[in-house]
Image (cartoon, rainbow, N blue to C red; front, side, top):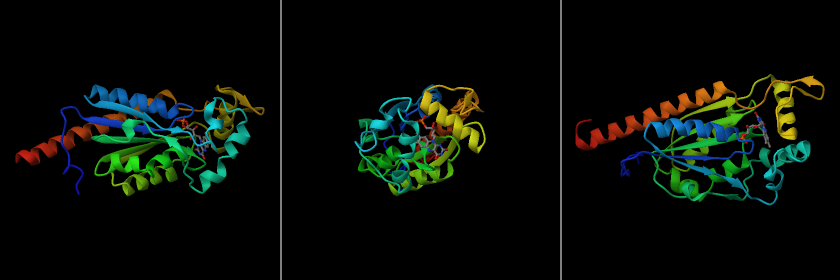
Length: 238
Ligand SMILES: Cc1cc2nc3c(=O)[nH]c(=O)nc-3n(C[C@H](O)[C@H](O)[C@H](O)COP(=O)(O)O)c2cc1C
């Protein structure tokens, strides 16, 4: 069924952000994009997924990580097999009729993080995504491709229509960006050196947030165009 066949437009377009964020980089993108969408007249809801699974949640309950190597590398087996776990889903991401759902997905061990994978395979996601449009964005140190493709695939499997995606990655080459991230996750701040090596700043920079605002502008224009087209078809003028 085309996404708009079951739509009953309210006066204000509604946008939902579903995301997970441990170090708050995804949150920053969500906030920057939300400002733009609200300025464009949208009603914007945030649904931050929490990882509550007793097998994994404890390590992410504090920042910085208590045992950076053990906590990070300990996630490898679950991440590589694409495991899901217990999560808490805010009500806004369990029900509701949205013009657009934006999925904010950090990369964990090359893949979609467990909390977002768990949401995208839940019945709540099916309720919200079915016959609705969704966009996705990845925030990562370097590896976005597998993650973005998985979010697209899982969202489509839940009946959503993918309208586009993008990503943001951090500065530095393979080794130095990794050292910078390890330093940040272990110390909770950007430092100039780690293990005696000079490192770049990790995390998003001001330009990245400008790009996030531009991406959101495109999504806002898409919402307006969809509504105009549908109203035109319904009234016979389109
Ligand atoms: C457990 C864990 C594993 C990660 N694995 C990867 C990875 O394989 N590739 C990558 O590019 N970034 C990886 N990162 C970096 C995150 O994608 C990056 O820190 C991002 O900012 C996380 O989003 P957040 O700040 O919203 O939590 C990993 C981070 C964590 C915490």
